[in-house]
Length: 145
Image (cartoon, rainbow, N blue to C red; front, top):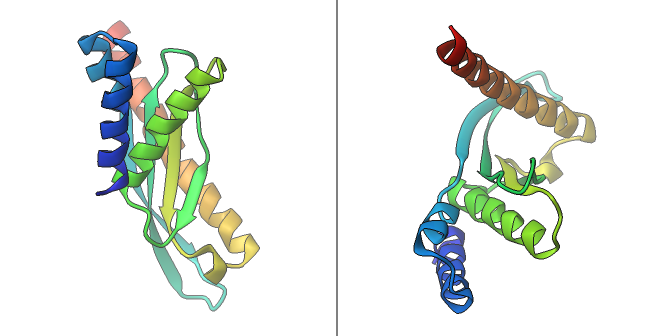
């Protein structure tokens, strides 16, 4: 069973125990936004290396979405989605005014120097920022244009 299936199964179980409204339960099972980007950086030997990164923004009802980045060769969108959903639950249980999010980059950090890890993180962050700012601008143009 993959991480997302297990997380959803556990959430449904807890939602029934808590008596959550079915509409609320369904809305919390769906992520707000999922992004996939390709990040290319030069390696220490001068060749190029490409990595796939994911960012899932699960829920922002309690405040801005928080969550770190996981660096692992087997990162996949379902795992990142599950971790974002769990972050939403953790911040709610701890009564912290944040929603949940998570990022993941498919790489082996042990094979990258610290400077290349930093460069990869910067490329990943910049690509996400570009996508999110463009979608915000399009929304504002549609709304006010």
